[in-house]
Image (tube, rainbow, N blue to C red; front, side, top):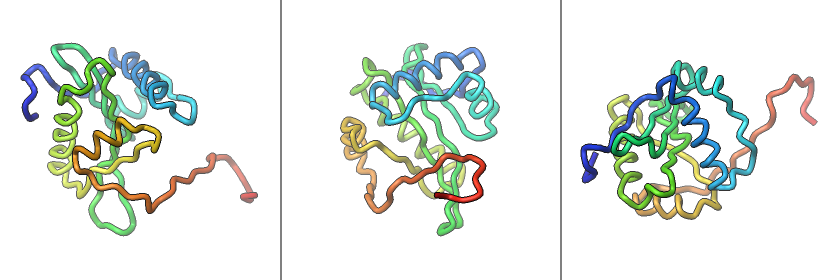
Length: 161
């Protein structure tokens, strides 16, 4: 990581840290006014992140204190033969922002994506999350408004009406 002291570290989630991750997911949702409720439970985190079956979770530590987290997963699209790293969340607690941590974390993730053979590090951001948009703009990330997120509930259905 770039100019941060050696005390900045990212490490994989451990079982006893699951409640901390859930707490930070809820903090982030409140902070960004997430437009849907957080339904995640500790069991979901254990199944999907700790066991690394669906996603990956890294905790961000500064001076042995957990100050944030990153969740991501491998994604593929039909138009590219090379998978990408889809960054689901990057969250740094408010009191630890504007210290260069986010930039170092993104650099770490960019290197991780490259070392895993991913073509892109990809993410989405709420249009209302102006601080994140400003941060990503400073990173000179590419943005597009070419897509609109759509979803429907996965329920048994004989027809969509």
